[in-house]
Length: 81
Image (cartoon, rainbow, N blue to C red; front, top):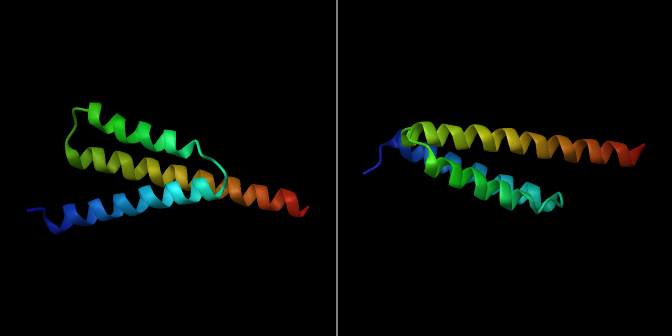
């Protein structure tokens, strides 16, 4: 049985994964599906522990979500000017 911390990390990872895909697709970047798959496969080849793989995924998804939101913001600002 998973510990509460492990379960919390899994839930956070799942939320970030879906958020990344939703934001990317709504912004018109279908390439996010490729990035998503690459990150998921990348953790399968690492010899690190599951926890470090989870943090790797979480960190990358947060970074990619930030980039998507920034791109959306810049796109909106440029078309308002």
